Amino acid sequence: MKIIFFLTFSFLITNITLAEEKKCLSLNKLSKEFIICAAKNIKDGTNRKNKQFKEVSSKKTKEIASGAKEIINKVKNKIIKN
Image (cartoon, rainbow, N blue to C red; front, side):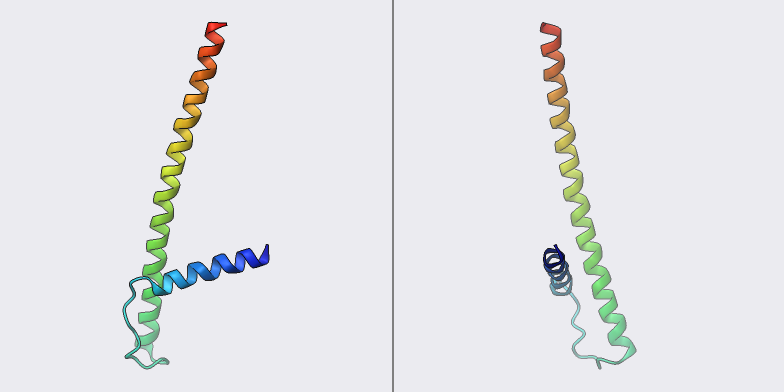
């Protein structure tokens, strides 16, 4: 379980750091500007991933709700016929 968690976490981190970030390499690594740039990259990447998760989860919720409604309607129709 710990291995799965570690792999998932590392995958998310690498996606966040590699996704359309500003290049902070020209700045000194211990400077205030570098830290601000890196923090902004992480924040922007996290916000993008969060938005993607929300979109996917809302689609899945709608699919599940429509499927549940269909099942309920089928059960109601069977009860009415009997």
